[in-house]
Length: 277
Image 1: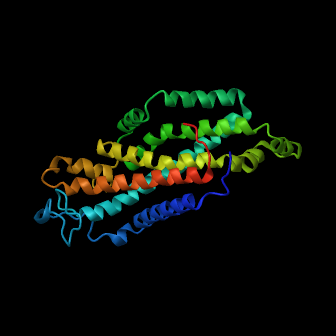
Image 2 (image 1 turned 135 degrees about the vertical axis):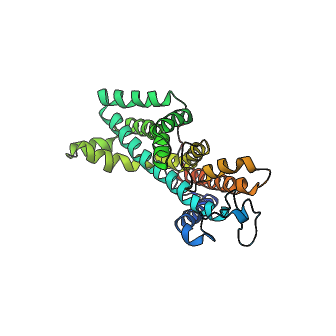
């Protein structure tokens, strides 16, 4: 791994811009209950499919619920579920990959063959099957997406450990009496974090789209819980009558995924690491 300690001002500026934008999204999701102009779950037959106005900035859905409030509350669900899922798969996959690369033998074979089995199925197809068996709910949707998400980090961490385990500083750590755990997590881990962090940053958008896709299909987040994918699914039948009910959550999803994807690109450029596909 090669660190770019002399990153150009342009790269640093882009990184700061997208860090700020991502921070704003996280702040909005945290403060969503305070920012909602109306109760996101309050229904009213008098304002069903009402167009955008001062009281309802993004209009209402077929139940008369404020779409702006539901988009804000959906940000908490979509963003935090994706970030939490990436954090969990990052930790599990990195730990398994490092153990496989360091110990080799049976441990390496078992972990990598399990990863190969997971990768034999398209992620979304396997996620749909798992979510369909387990039923709806955010927890089951996250489990369905995470069941294959760890393999990316495991394969990358294993490759990095195999490349570095024979370096002189690792041998020096062994001779000084350090155990395998100390060498793995205090010596090797800091040196392989770069490409792993880049992958994690780009995976946030992927996980967000996956969770939204499961909710759109009706096997993710269930009503009346606000989530962008389920909001699109609920309103798609009324797209000609009330297009704002679809465009608002769809636009929020696209904007959020773009920001996190660009953030991942900026982190990659700043660290100047080459990430394996």
